[in-house]
Length: 396
Ligand code: SUG
Image 1 (spheres, rainbow, N blue to C red):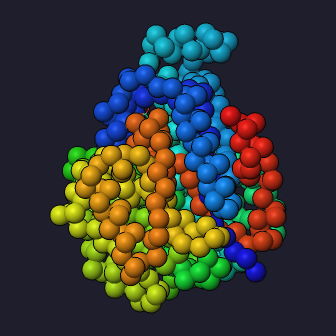
Image 2 (tube, protein in one colour):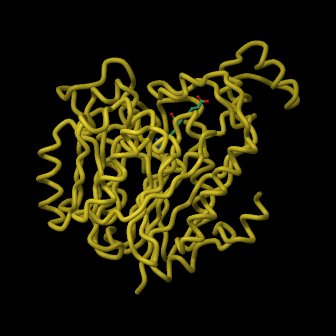
């Protein structure tokens, strides 16, 4: 059986803009009110999707959501025709208009947590949309996201869909951005690593910015997805890096197959993580980038750890990086060093201009939701959501 990892990227919606809505997200705050170009944003995303398809990878696309979200504005007491509602909310509550207009569903790494069938006791692929409850603009996504995922992965013989967790701070969940699956081979049972910012009361917490992901959410999802406890790791992200702009774990760590690439300061207890991962997956390869080589500030501005690690069918493992990595000499030297080092599987890098998304804190890995699929599961995916040259042209 051929088992692959597919990537489903979010298509950028026509209201893409910089509203400075995301607390703890340095780029979103820095670029607040700058002019955006939704068309360029969508085309940049589509260029990456086509390139990955051309590398022989299975690439999907998830649609943008209705924005401004009039139903939310109605729930908040605005009434009348849509145009009247927009006029009133612009006059009386411009912050609500910004939240209701964000195109943030483009970052599908936050759409859901996905567990491949090889990891789940019932042999199905499990999906739990993320409640994204720390920010109003993102909390509007999960209902529609759930419907999109059900329409994309509709066959109940292969796919199991859960509702988002209750949207309360104690169960804050930001989806696959804080979840990494490591395995010897995509089809083998994997180790699922859930990284949280907020755990028990006595665990250290960030002081400046919110910890968006809770340990309780990861535990609930592991139960819902019927994961084997022996193959689940919960690890705390270092709260000090959350305060430096690492609002999701995928801003400081990325994994693929047997490889975990992470910054020295990514985790609260990196020794424990190394030991636990080695015990659960003896063949794990860990690349720990020291602060002396790449500072946390450089990691945040370049999004090095928000790269995608991909295994195209022709062989090798590619690091798909944002252009900002190439523009930072220290980060680019680190990329070259990793590629040259034959003790890890990374063999090459591909660079993409994703600036429109990057200016809101969304790099290559933020834009994609990974779904590991067997041949039969892949055949059951809605074919209209898969990218090929023709669909790319249509969408462009
Ligand atoms: O939730 N930015 C998003 C970026 C999400 C990136 N995703 C991952 N790291 N996986 C966020 O912070 C900014 C919107 C604005 O300010 O207009 C925003 O929501």
